[in-house]
Length: 565
Image (cartoon, rainbow, N blue to C red; front, side, top):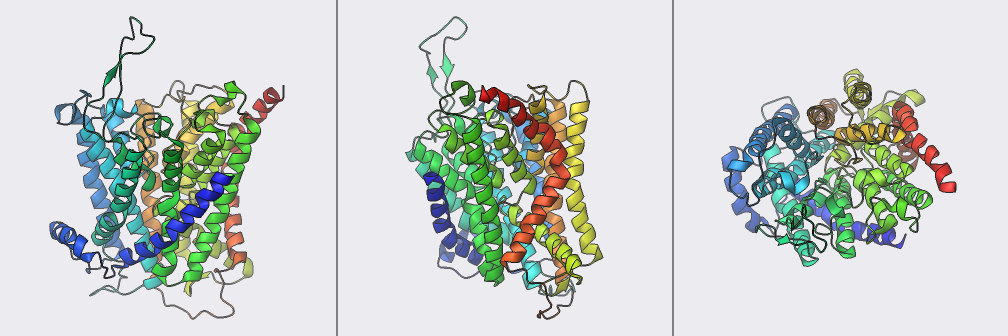
């Protein structure tokens, strides 16, 4: 509990000034650091053929976003399939198969980092540093850019030059400024701190060691190293989560000390919370920023408390059999807290194997990802929160007999139809693929045929759709079926959830704004915040309660008699 309170206090103390600084960055304000960054930014703008003050309509903004993703997708997919013939491959790693390369590319392109490959054993240094870390840097910033454009549409709504459409900013300028001025400096600082704690940062090949108990089959062990610290820094700060090593932050080389473990947990939530603190100064509506923060903080505290209670209730530190999958040097409390935080944010990194946590801890993680806006990923969390906000305004308007309005602009049929697409897309995709995988013989690859096996399959698709990346290991997911279906789910969970709210914001901004009066719905209030939380929970439970009961709840009930003996 003391660690949780210290973590919360430190995150809030750091995120408050970072949020205000980020608001200035995304507004394009003149800053003292312009002399340092301008000489890097100007050539990039010329290369991209744009000017930072050149605005875009929402269609132009979304088109630039999708174009940049398509170009990166092709380049990285080819890189993974040809890495054996390229430099910076001292360990002689072979090329990836087309399906594994496809899944890995889509996973990192969508800021998910779901891994079906065996960590460092299947990627060269070049693939790690450019394909993996490169996407880990730029993809979260793309999400941040999209949510900044959405906020401009909702609260700015200025007309684009020479057009009746709404100007939502310049995509290329948003990505360049946020990357250079915000994300990379934070990554540099955290990378240095992790290196200080003992995380490797080298381009040399890994050493070979002789085990103490060597055998004829196992005479030596190669210890994989590499530029691990920079990747760990961006994987935590950028809501990425994919580890250099297969077991992720449970490996001592990625997470060697209690201090590195604490710093990683701070990094997991730091930027998402900073984005929440950005909302008030960026939009000029600080009460709205307080609504977002209060709602997300309430859900976060409930989630973390339930995870800590669940793991303490279902697992005991003295029962070694039930400590399976956990690091003794980290313990159950820090493992449960990490599991909750990494799914409150679209991070997905782990310091213990989630497959071995208590069933109710797994349930908390699943619900966090199904909500996908407890804090959410970089930009993506706030974008999903806006979806819930629009739904809550619409439903509250129906309950009070008023035409639903958000900040004086009516929410009408076209906007509601687009919201319905997002609401229905999640259960159709997740439940559809879960049912299909469990029904087809020989494709699930589960290690537990009972209730836990249902949780394994369901969790994998939930994690993919939520762009989280964590998984219930024990699942045989390195197959063409899992690679192709998860790649599809990853894309469906990423792009509609980013682009559709941007379109809705532009549609609302184009409407005439009615003055707010005593009869207007007051959303910047504790009452509406509780209504919003209730709607979030009702939507999640109504859509997914059956599979949650068949999976983690039934798993918990079957385990309880064993623990009582």
